[in-house]
Length: 155
Figure (tube, rainbow, N blue to C red):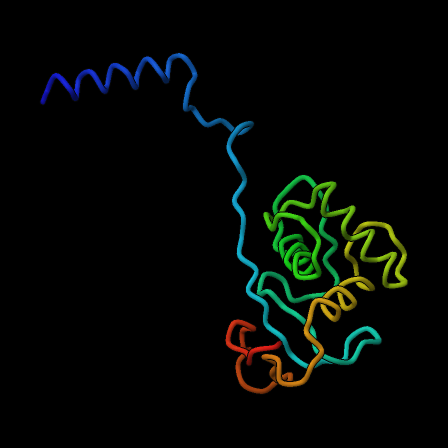
């Protein structure tokens, strides 16, 4: 048994010395996050209705930018994913996220600059929500948020 352990240790050492199986910052994959949607009824930025939230960022002023992780970028990515954009919710505001935002903006009469700012946040949250009554929505200031996973069928 000791011989087998020793052989395994030698094989592992040789593989590590050869560079196999070593994760570095350049080849490690980024973490991805879940997008659990919650909804509430609000009036924000000229929109009245149901607004989606993913509990990563709830403001309207932070503009996520590339280069580092942010919860605002993660919130925007989750909303975009719920709208059918094929992006990864990893919290890094890269070219794919920026392109998806610009596309969303152009389809919703917003200036297509590719950045989620004070005029885009309300629109993004509004369109990411299910606007049908009874679809997991809780009135603002009422009981805790209800997950869309717990809503009636058809929502």
